[in-house]
Length: 292
Image (cartoon, rainbow, N blue to C red; front, side, top):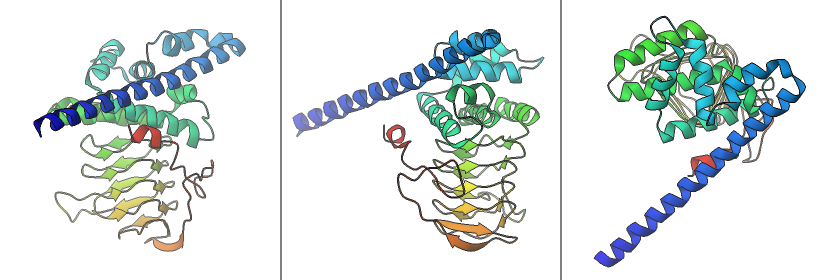
């Protein structure tokens, strides 16, 4: 039995190594694509050369590129861009880097105004906000709560988003502009969720402890949607703009109104995808990342 246990352990270890190698290769492909996009832009817009070189071409990886961009945006008199970059890179784990790659893909695929991964890295404030959240969340988990809250305040000032570092956010998140987005301390968000500007995941003011929404995979939260209380928003559901949700949402439901009511049901296939978030949502393109 011990011999078979050892064989099983070795097999699992080899499988994990293969998966990690495959993940690294996929990450390299995405980074190579970003660099090709930068070189293409450089050939048509030579005036952009200094920014492209500083932010993309001189960096060693996709994560370094986006962290460097963010660092120059949020530096303060207390913390320089160099110190912020070092802090971010020291804190982020391999799992965080995987999440960031998925977030970059989501931003490039789901935003009609972005389209290129390079543009998402350079200019997509929702993506920048997510990266800052992931750093703050890791700091919070490591009991560095003071620094996590400081980073939260810096993000609020620069990106107009208030995301508590204790909340849990999955991978492949499309956060539109981040402006006006509020996500409470005990909220959870699954994978492949799209969040447009002005969305609030808050409490009712009548609960203590676990008091914020639980958003499952593949949900779309449109402009200024508000979800209050410790309620579940079912997989693949769609919350229409300016709706206020205070009761649990069934999977694949379309919710509209104040208070929100079910006005329809979504029909989604695994390969459904379109830039129109109201009609389609991609479930499939991130599977390769999530299954590693």
